[in-house]
Structures are given as structure tokens and as C-alpha cells.
View 1 (cartoon, one colour):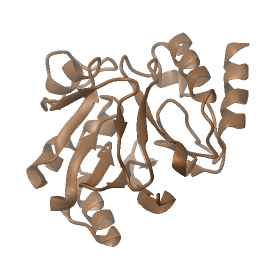
View 2 (tube, helix red, strand yellow):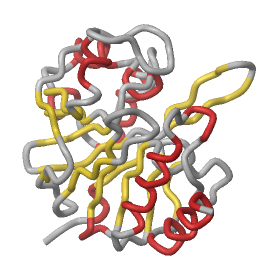
View 3 (cartoon, one colour):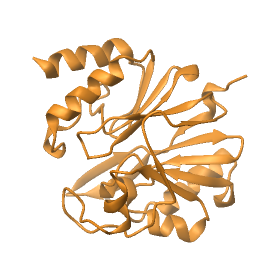
View 4 (tube, helix red, strand yellow):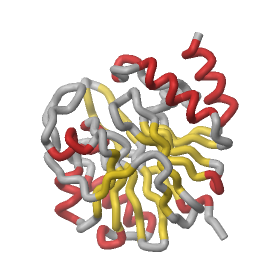
Length: 222
């Protein structure tokens, strides 16, 4: 029996450029403990601690962090995070050199210099309390960006492949997506899956799924 409530958005708030930035990592309950999906900007660990406590978990319950891609707002807290836990770091092969420091981040800044323990690829599936969680390769926003499909929960964890800046599902942010044609094809890929809800890193959880994703792809492909 699956539990669709076993996926939790963890909103983190930061002051940036004179305004508020809210981002949405996730925690997914599994038989082994929690998998965190991304960990936020530097300084996010205390906010993450509060979320874990609210869920009834501690750092010892986190066995893995799955990185959707290497942008700083997704991995900036990895060094502090790994000071709190022995969790394994999962990321796509194409993202690994930007995370471990062999290459500079595509969009500038410094690498977090954290080793990746397990490289993942399209089709890899994790067993979770919300049913199977499948890795879907969605490059374009970054070379190895991945999204996560939980079909039993009718849920897509989109990372930055989709956004919901005003509470409505939208395409990737073109300003921060170097390969927009590739990102558009990734939206087409996501439109092939049957989901009712989408968790966006920028915008949070929205009650929109396959039909909206297909509409977005049509608009981007025009």
C-alpha cells in the first residue's frame, strides 16, 4: 500500500537582491528513511532541521540526497548538510563534475566540491512509501538535470524543468536555461506521463499535471 502523503515539500526562504526567494526542496519517505531532493542555498541547514523536526525525523534518518542538478540554489548547502549526516549523494553522471569540482558550474560561481557517491540515469527507480520514484532525464536547464516521477502518487517532482512562479504551471525559466531547445524537448518528455500534481522548485506544489504540461510544450514548440 502506498502513501501519497509520503512526499513533503520543504519551503525555504531567503533574502536575495532586496526581495524574498522561496525554494522547495522535498523529502521523500522510503523504507530506509528519508531521501532529500536538493538542499537549497548556503545557510539552509537550520531551516531544513526545522522541517525534519516537524515531520518527526532527525538528520540520522536521512540516508540519501538526490540532486536534480548542480545550480547553487540546489546544492549550496551540501557541505553543511554532509556535516550533519552520512547520507549518500546521488546525481546524474553529466552533473557530477560540476558538483565535485572538476568543472566550474555552467552558470558561474564556485563548485561545492562535494563527491557524488552514486551516479544515476534515466529510468533508475527508488522504492518509496509513495510507490516507485523514477528518475526522468530532463536536460536543458543544465546538462544532466533530472526530474522524478511518482506515478502511484500522481505526482511529478519537476526540479527546474517546470516552474510555477505565480501559482500556475509554466515552462522553465528561459533566463537561467542555457539550452532552451533541449529543455523544450524535456517538457515534451514530461507531457508523456500521467500525473495530476507537480512540485516545482520555484513555485511549490500545484494541482496541475499532464494536460498543463502538454499545453506548455505546445506553447514552447510554436
